[in-house]
Length: 168
Image (cartoon, rainbow, N blue to C red):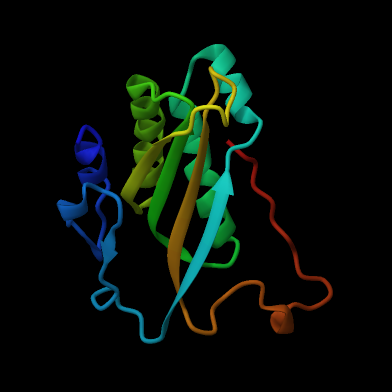
């Protein structure tokens, strides 16, 4: 498929290249990642109303980036390292270039986050969306050592400092 080079370009440690199913489901081998007691951490997200802006500006790559950022930030807040992302693009009628552009953004953000894009599905859903609309969703799976999940409330004490970083 056209997405195969995007998927292959994001493969990271533990993520296995197995495109026998055309990128619909991915494999990840946890044995070589160096965790003694690994726990998986998952999250799912939608981009939401930013899609409207994307459609008005006809710029679709940024919403793919945003989707990954939303997912990865959720598990980073728990202290987890992202392993892989799975995505879904749904529209009343598939616009291949639009879907590809969204997936370019997803793949770019996966590379930046150090995780793999293991699959991305598309679905035509006539009558569900506005004729010019679409929706994207994503899920991330990360890994953390047992006992390291944040927040660790038992370690927090009065006077601790919280550091906030600006969003890009």
